[in-house]
Length: 160
Image: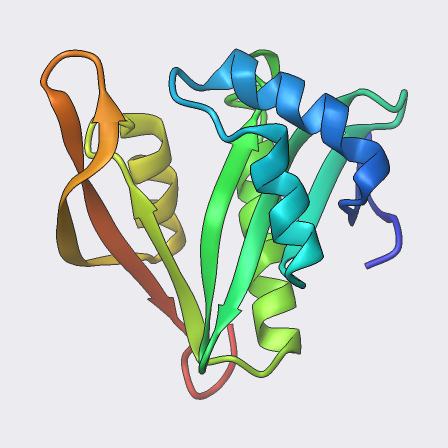
């Protein structure tokens, strides 16, 4: 994945040079964002970061993937508020699946807030199935903590 072009956007590996912009988008998009250090640690530990940029160079979104035993864990997928609803999340998810398959892993696992309806809809339409719930997983303003739904996408034998 060295600059895959998607109409007016392209995908590229996340590097240290992207982290200030990634952290700024993270803080804009989430009430409880990852820190720049979280992204640095992810890259330092060999996780896969993917950035999506508009052809003008503006960051549109990103994701972070962590290989775990025989599957990939999608740790973070974020699209700027301005680009939500444009297919950017779907494109990042497709790239996450492509990377996972390329590493010959069996599937993709993620956690998502039950209150994140847009993300839930995207994952369900893509083919993720809810396989569990992690109690009090996320910080939340209203009740202190929010559960996470655990979802998995498993590759079919024929290929996806």
